[in-house]
Image 1 (cartoon, helix red, strand yellow):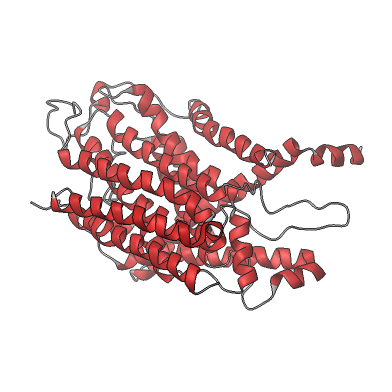
Image 2 (cartoon, each protein chain N blue to C red; image 1 turned 30 degrees about the vertical axis):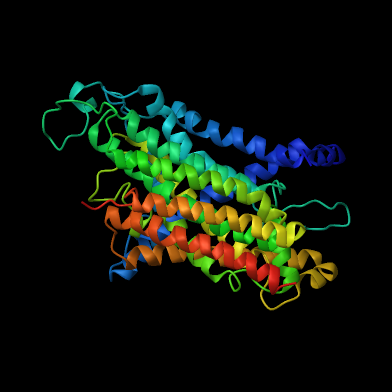
Length: 353
Length: 119
């Protein structure tokens, strides 16, 4: 019986299914709790306590929020395009969730019985391209949601969101291209391996790309200095007409994006699952399982740093005006990232032979 | 390595299904009381006069057009970036000329006022 189960687990389909279930459970837990962490931290930043009533330290708060959204009535406005109105939240929700599948979380776990890669669902050779194409799909959710509501303010909000995300996508792509150029590969694990073999994290040679990535990742997820698509209390945004769980999916989708982009950033710039100051690959050949787990922890800590950066920025900076936002995108970030691309190419060609 | 895309394919399907699945499941739990005033669009309490007809400020179209130029450009840059070491000096100057042409287009768009928003 046991051997039958073991054989079944080794078929690619079942193995992938098991990994997906684990991935989704972990991802949803992290996404649920980052909302709580954000509200608590914002509370501390503003000298108050934040939500701490539901359960010890407020730990049950995300579940209470989820249940509340789940049992709220779902309304579809009369003037809306009801099919598009129902489809739109899917587009915000699924792209970054699929993106998690491309990430590699640690070096392969080797047991005597098998050589399974437990910490990666699908380490595809076009990982970076897949991530970028999925992140462009996210725009549809905002645009269609605003358009399909059949109401003026969500319509304008959708347009604003769309042109903001379009403006910041070009610098984001250009900054990621420099990483691809350094690693010579689209595969995310190859990018990490390149940083391990050079013993140099890419944020040092590519400091300009790193800063551009940080700014664009905040703009792409519509977070605070750039939260014009929907300012939580002041600006009427694209999901004004949404209620209940459909609104919940927009909300969860935004946080999925936050978590995903802060997990992508370490892989691109901070060496991913590399343990700092240690020669990982040499040690991994001696203690494969230990290094695998420590690398996973290292990746988790680096990702948490980026997630904290999001919250920190939100607590610190005031919102930009809309023309300032587009100006930063087109007149500052785009020229800098074009020139940066050229500089990195020159450095790679002439200095790093 | 087609098999590594299998996981992505399954995850793709599951991620899309989650939303309709939750909405259908939620029907068992959530109230549904029909009332016409609840379904009217949000207008800060003022009577609804009209709905958006798709009329949009021309600035949004211009942003989309400029975006299209640069997005197509990045598509051409990807193969160059991944084969950078093989192409070497030739690729460097080739892409240099390509980027210069684009920067010329960028300057043209700027001088035409396509990248101005405050009025």
